[in-house]
Image (cartoon, rainbow, N blue to C red; front, side, top):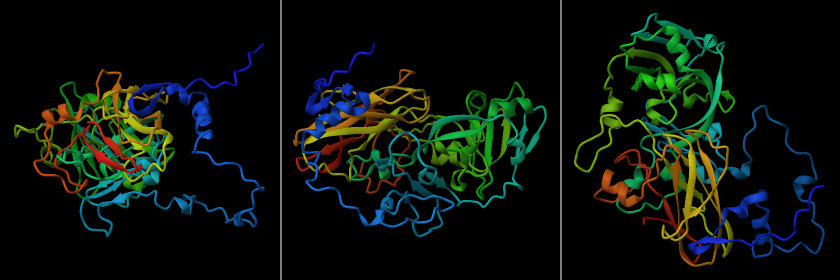
Length: 438
């Protein structure tokens, strides 16, 4: 005989300063927190009169389109472009992460960076070649690759220059999208690259592969051959549908955890070799400078990182009461195991609820119940992964990696790469939110 669940809700336990509550308040579908909110100012009293029928419920709606698009009331949920007037330059499209939830970025909102625009590739005419230090050079059509056994995995892709504005010595007042919008997470389907490497037969002396795209600049990057045998993929599908053109249609290289520029779009060649090519993008654009004037020769991995997406800059807390702090965490070195949240600028911390099962090298959503008392607060997050890596505090990060001597005026500048320290949002007594450093 099943025991009846008690109708009495457990108390909302405060576990850290400034009103952070124990994550158990989110259990049972959030019913505990919802009950507390219903008894406070967040809920309205039931109307004394029956609800009136709104105009849209009195007549038939629109005809179903062949391709569904978001509601017109979600018109602000779009990407930000670095060339909104079509300027001929490297084009960045930043994902509106503060307006999204869950862990998957919808295909039309997935961030992209294109160095020479989006080529209009006919998949029937496209060819992919693997050559160099192999037993047998091979050429594949898209149709041929689609006949191979496919695998599906969820992984994030992040530009090495994402969050570059955070190197500024003064906090930029910018949204999550502006600061961190060059990262997205999708469910990718394709062929393990190891299958193709085995079919071609790589030379035991080979240690590198040079991946090249079919765009007009022939963007290419050197990748350790070992990565090809670990978890690299030739991706053909993105969130269940064929790749979006800006994300590499008809095929792209996916290197989970490695910086976005290495995940070559429009893939057409892989050269197997015994040395790196030292291409433009790995000797100039993606070689992070250090405070002593030296630069990394190679810096592949996007390290453990997290940031709060809501509440965040551009939002406003209308009144004191219960709120949910939510954000995303991810790591190029493993699976997120723990995220701590602070509401007092790092003086005290509480462990957030991490939604699972968490996947390696993929977005993980974290949530934290918070009772805001109307007083100033500083909220931030810090993540750990199963490799033991931890998101560094800003002071430690700056000591190792440096910051600009003058404030960066735009979040779109690229003074450096691979920022993975904390992001802090300051909430004032009016509920307005600013970007702050602690």
